[in-house]
Length: 272
Ligand SMILES: N[C@@H](CCC[C@H](N)C(=O)O)C(=O)O
Image 1 (cartoon, protein in one colour):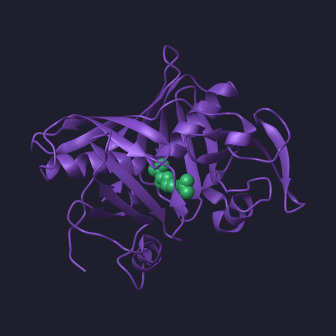
Image 2 (tube, rainbow, N blue to C red):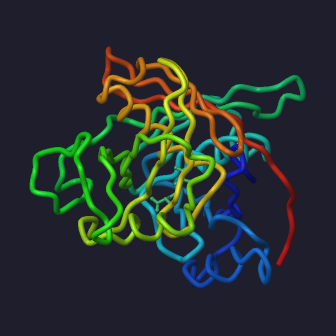
Image 3 (cartoon, rainbow, N blue to C red):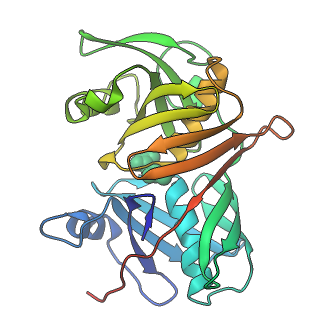
């Protein structure tokens, strides 16, 4: 399945057990020698919620949260009849997320809104070793030569947001690994490169921790809109243009929570 091009292999953990998800993710995410994906998502029973998600990047590292995968899980469980509810709770390593499913004419899930919770700014919780309470538009030199101002936001997983120009031409394969593995990020980071198009539209390319450049990142889009608001670039409801499509993000003033809305698509099913 994919959420605007951010594709994962989804495994129904009610029926299948994967003993070694790390090796599975590395092996089958390979686009030449495996199935090909940005990683692996396992849908599991939960004690307290409707469902539980575990997600692994293409390098086998487990992440706390994935925005695009949570939408796809909503589609998976509803379309396959694992639930008939259109409002669901999902247990993740970043806490409980609430999903609202919207059906298309075919009565299958087309769009999902995820309550992604409150953004986190405290340096120690990002985590970053930069010795300031929070990191907003902070000048940082990477590898003693690449200078960027970064804003750090955790959506349960770490994001460094960079506002710049000419992102189409950026050599992400070169700069992405540098920011991802910088010593200031002890658990590595996802990095979003953002061009501000207007007060309600931004364009984003993302280098994901553990997967490299992907066509979209839901948590990254949320972190970027929060960073755009904090830096005075956009309003609280903003469309994010990504390589794989668009996401609508709203950081509500009333409850301080971030809401992510976008599509979810099934590509194919198979047995290995
Ligand atoms: N693509 C995802 C985020 C996946 C995890 C990320 N690479 C990390 O390691 O934190 C999304 O849609 O949020």
